[in-house]
Image (cartoon, rainbow, N blue to C red; front, side):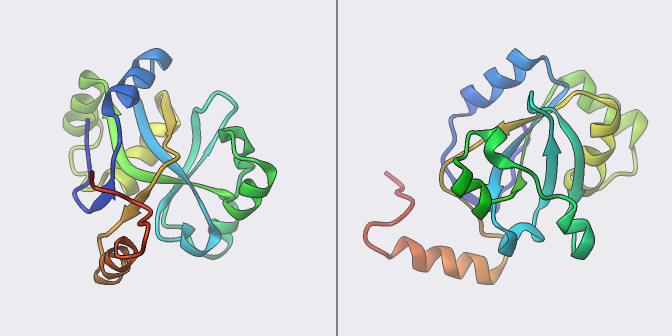
Length: 164
C-alpha cells in the first residue's frame, strides 16, 4: 500500500486491499469523481465497465483534459452527479502486488521518480490496473491554498469532514 502524505480523508484500507485481491489486479488506484474546475490538478483516468484503467493522464490541460471526460454513471453516480463530475481522479493511493512493484522499480522503470506521471500511466498499458472508487470526503492539501481552504471548511458547522 502506497499513500500520499498531503491528503485529508478517512479510508478503510481493508476494503481497498480486499477489492485489489478480488479483482486479481497488479495495481489498484484509489479514485474519486471530480468536477471540471479541479480536474486538471490531478491524474485522470478512463476505465472500462469492469473498472480496469485503460487510459491515464497526469494533470492534463486543454484538449488533453477534455479527452479525459467520461460517463461517471459507471461508478454509480446519478446522471445529475455525473454531469457535475465527469472526470475520474486518482487520489495518489495505490495497492501493488509486491512482485509487480519490485519489477517496475528495479527492472522496467529504475529511473522513475513519480507514480502518477511515470509508473501508473506506463503500467496501465501492459498490466492489470484497476480503479477503486472512494466516494467520501477527500481533499488534497498539498498547496498552501488548498491547505488554507480545507482548514476554513473544517471550521464550518457542520464540517464536511469530522476527525472523530
